[in-house]
Length: 213
Image (tube, rainbow, N blue to C red):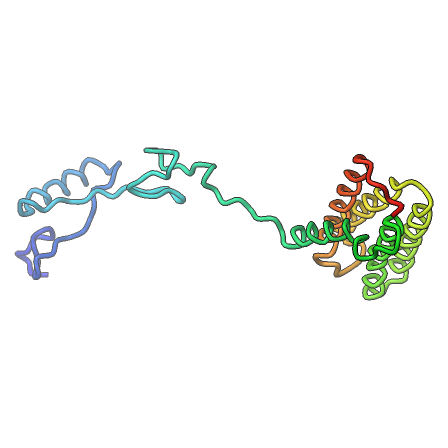
């Protein structure tokens, strides 16, 4: 830099230093910068930097919070339902109307056949897991649901609701504990199927719909 050129004087091309006046500067620095500003041509204004907190929008406000720059909770993204839950609700509704596809059988018989079939899926998972303890436990649980289904054929339809709701709780337990390895999305899917079907069956029983054909 030539010795006769002041640091704040115009340089080739008409550009000027871009230092900003910072809030909270000592008075000596502030006076020095003010002296440099006095030498600037008229119309040249030194910009003042302001810090914008992360997550806020500079120069404007988010709808619902005019002038504050804060995020309105109403505009926050709402998490969507997981795909296993959505598909579980669809299959639960299909299971509830499944007796229509087997019209020659009593509805209670169709539901009774479906209950142990759903429970038996965990036998396949336990075999893939490979641990003898897991296979024994899951096989015993399936046997219990077979008994409940068999009794419900000639007993109360509430046994079917109890069986479906109970298996949904078993799915929830599996989802939380991962007792059987690598079940992935199956527990939330199956629990939704069970509880949706149980809810529809409960409504049908309370409405007096017959389950004996």
